[in-house]
Length: 323
Ligand code: PBG
Image 1 (tube, rainbow, N blue to C red):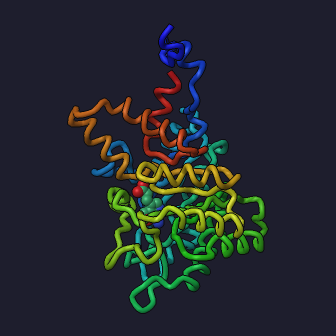
Image 2: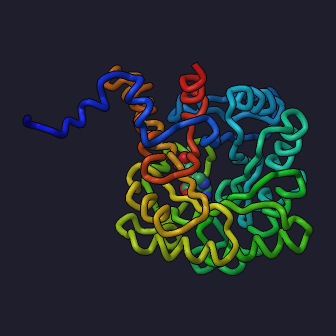
Image 3: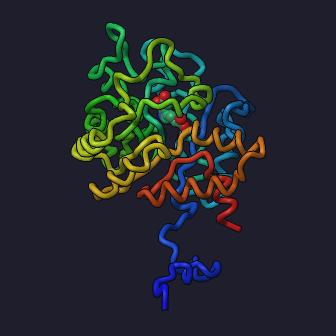
């Protein structure tokens, strides 16, 4: 009888579909980004990222509790300092806004795993990810500051640090500094493959970190490159990265897949601000079914090979998954 093979047999109803489903999605896979700002009682919605906020320490503690109660195990913390300067002093200030937030969150929600973004761009007056020399970011002098920043986060109680600057050798510099200060048990999740992407647009409003001149193409990767991504990951693993990240996620699913196939460390993918805002905007306009598109996108990132997803959708998706 024709045809013998009928793949539709295994799509007949939700029970059999559930049984043969290849990819799973759970709040366990999510890391939720939070933005801490100075002041008190502040909770300001980011206009280009509906549902996301800049919050002062007192408010972010409550938010962290809510995130944890939804079954999301981890947050990624970004800081917006009161003052910025040429050398991003706020980044490694022991009394900086992120350092305070880490302490406050670990005190009130000890079970929540706190990861910190290690970068200079939110703290520098020029908005670049390091020290400027001759009109460009100077790699090696930036490494010292990144290492100091990572150590200050660890001292404040961070569970993991995540360098996002794309300087060469920063995982090595951070690993060395952490070990020297007795933080050999703090893992590093490196933004190993970070492209110079226009999808970061809304984030730069959120973190107030848009570069004041030029762009980030002398340190972030060219979106046209695929093989170079493997080289970046290889170097970071050699330098001691425990988890490697690909960022953004959606235009780079091929890269996530390559990294997953080639290396044996956990792979994270950052479903970035622009990817979030596009869906939120189209959802608001009624042009797409926001919830279904969200779940499809998150599933596709997992299917491509990501173990962990950094996503602004974490709370919305967890609420659906917990039903
Ligand atoms: C900072 C940093 C950026 C993002 C995460 N860390 C922005 C950038 O490199 O300009 C982007 C996150 C997002 O778009 O959601 N170095």
